[in-house]
Picture: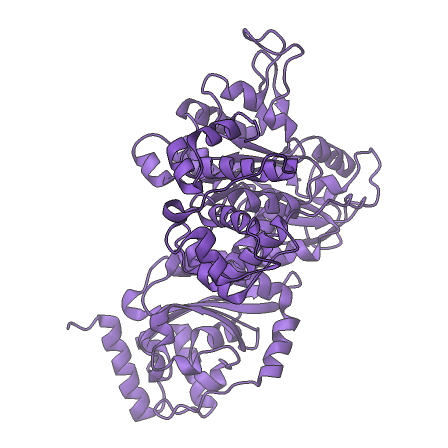
Amino acid sequence: MTMLPGSRRLDGAWLKLDDQDHPPGGQMSADIYDSWMRCITMGLDALRPPSPEFVDAAVLRQEQQRCSLVRGLALAEMHTLHQQIAGSNFMIAFATAEGLLLDIISDSSFSDASDAACIRAGSLWTESICGTNGLGTAAYLKRPIVVHGREHFFARYNNLTCVAAPIFAPDGEVAGILDASSDCMSRQAHTQALVAMAATQIENGLFREQHRGDILIAFHNRGEYLHTLSAGLLAVDNDGRILAANRAARVLLHGLPASAGRLFGDVFRGRFSDFVDEGRRKERQRLEDDVGSQFVATIENSRQFPMTHRVLAPRPTPPKSPAAPFISADQRIAAVVQRVAVAAARKMPILIRGETGTGKEQMARHAHAASRRSGSFVAVNCAALPDSLIEAELFGYTEGAFTGARKGGSAGLFKEADGGTLFLDEIGDMPVTLQAVLLRFLDDWTVRPVGGSKREVDVLLVSATNADLDDAIAKGRFRSDLLFRLNTLEVTLLPLRERTDFADIARHLMHKIDPSIALSEAAIQRLAQRGWDGNIRELRNALARLSLSETGPVIDAETVDVVLGAGRPERMAPKITVEEGAPADLHEIQRALVLSTFADTGNNISRTARRLGISRNTVYRALRGKPD
């Protein structure tokens, strides 16, 4: 195997280190050379690494609790990084500013590696213990670093490339270290950029959290970057006094007096009270600094502040009725839930992918609740709207705009969701012609009703699909530029068969169906063995059938086999019967089962009848809304 020039230089460095107790400066970068010299000064011997050091479990828990805010934000970004750059022998880690490893996400090949035993939560990664390494060296330098292969001081880590970046709190202190380590043979050039972006995302999350009760201004020279990591963030108080600025804001306002304690008017032209009032009326507005540079700006939390020509203290957001919980005992799903909540609070467009029945609408409702928006949650099934009327349904129309138009017109679903959340389900089935209209809406957040004039709306946009949008783009059925605008945050919900919290989901659904009925552990295990192609929706239907069995308050494994059959429900489901004169709610249960199964089978009446063990006429009657 041919050795790379860089590897030869490092081999020479190791030989000279062995001979002379110091590395030659010309054979490695200045940062790595300085780190090796620090290691030598501290008395480390490259050929005799000290034993790994760990804190006890109580100290680890205490540190995890102390860092709970930054740790929660970091875990969400770690899961995203793992999806973006995972490969062979791969690990994402989060450590304290002192180099104490708090959390790890790794693949199985890394976990099985011979050196993995010393790379676990509770281990210490300072240079004084582990020599030159990503976490420890980034903690010392307080800036990003890449340590590749033999650049590590100790040979035990020579098979790894470590990319680490510090995370800074709003006060400028290091709040933690993020690290991505992979097999050096599969090093990816973009890893460093992705880790830096993740660190910035966490920093902005800390900034927003610290200034939750203050006025938060996001701004950028270009409007399309307003809700990205490139946007500047300013926190100001009710009098327009600047409290803090993130790193992007300091770059955008370089040379201007934007430090803490200065006034809005010291930096920008125009009155602060006018800016706040305009921010209550419009989602975006123009902002000009004192030297004439133009920005697009938004007040991220404008709805917390009343519109008046005199700036008043923040008004608390009215309490919202909590949304139904999204079960997330599975750590991967918990990370998705947290990322969605953060994005919703920032009014970022969210795209939810997943198989049918995985809970995409439930996740959208979670986003609405997390956004704390006072408006309505409006769900639209893009596949169910007729092509000829979809624009009128979404954007509204005036009276007489077309034949059959309702007297008085219609505000449209976008306007109905103003101040709230618009959920576009089955976005992959939206006609291409309407995609262009939706794209224009995302440029300026205004709608033009059919036959009317433009109106501004303020909506959180959440989309969902079970379609392969990449394939749809390749075939010309979906616009790639629209996808880029819809997926500022993109998450994928795991199918039920891959989730580790099946028992929690089953118990939660059964409690909603009938709180007086419980599932035995054996019943849950038997249910978990099934394929669940219809995911949570199919499980809900099966549990509803089980709830009708007369087996007492606890359903056991035998009842599961009898009611659902030993194989797939479609082949062996028993017949559902409702006696004449039964209570109306029992008829409604049967009808709900029929309608749900009808949707699961792709609106196939014969398959619905076979799966439920009922006649086709019973299906017809349920679809017409008549009791059987």
